[in-house]
Image (cartoon, rainbow, N blue to C red):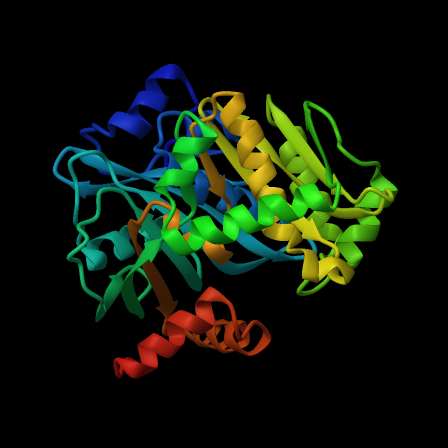
Length: 364
């Protein structure tokens, strides 16, 4: 398998995705800004989510081109989950379809993915101009004749809502929201004024010190943020060219909410937010996001990506993007064992969710 360094030509291969060779070309340890270049905002958000998961695992994000149509290649990004420094053979991946491709052959794509990343178990999120009329389906087929195993493959189409358009003014942004959402937003803004909340936004630096950040992370709702995850997200943010952090405090100085991310052109990527559990009644999550959005609009930022997914009243105003979630399970002893372990130890994770759909479809 041929290796290349990431060059301007390769960048256009990734994004223009024209290549006469069917062989995957790998590239690992790529600068994060480089791998997001040329992608749409929803694609950047999903890829950033993958980067963050790789950071938590201590794994390098890897890249290959895989063929999806004659003369057209998709960009495949993935990392291998680890236990300490040991690779587990379980991978998570994102596939970005090239322009002009709005559907794909799940069997053919799974075959190339399996041959490229060599995982016993893999979750794959496929994004691009996928038709909104796409429906879920399940397939069972050979993936690699070389290894003599079969793989169970589930493809489920779903809507992803992570990116919110901000408009050019706060008034225009509020106008685009639904009536119920706008009412909740207005009430939250008035509440912040009555409470004398102080909002701080720092571009290129921290909004609070490490001790305060660690303390509110432990008091986060609905559950504490694990220290290694907080360290990972801050490490990823620190490597970006325009990181930002924000804080929200009461008039008595009590820290209520913190958030952070980075600016990528007209897009702001929000990677984390921690809200103090004891101040739940104040609505700190929405309050922080509204004040942050007002600041971003004033800085001429046109979109915000809630990396990992938006929640609450703003989710309904986020752009709707169709994606395909694939679960590829080798029917080898290792593959089946890892499939069972992934469901058992992470019952709310993507593997468990897709596995339940697999059982519902009768593919067991």
